[in-house]
Each structure stands twice: as C-alpha cells, then as structure tokens.
Image (cartoon, rainbow, N blue to C red):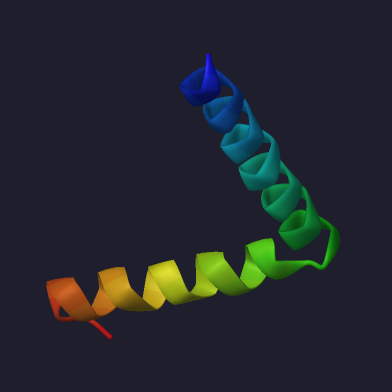
Length: 45
C-alpha cells in the first residue's frame, strides 16, 4: 500500500512540475535545445 501511495505522489509531483514548466513558457526552450542537439548529431548544425 505504501508503494502505491508513493507512486501516486511521484506522479502528482511530476505533473505539477510539467504544468509549471508549461506555464513558464519553457516548452520553447526545451524544443530549441532538442533541435540543436539533433542538428549536431546529423552534422548540419
């Protein structure tokens, strides 16, 4: 039972951090970094 409660708390915490990041506009920052990494891997950037 304790593991189930801990798992639910971790999920709630993860969703909270995700929503805070979306609210702060960090989606664009993460996407920009992901594009840069992909471009470097294939040798374009």
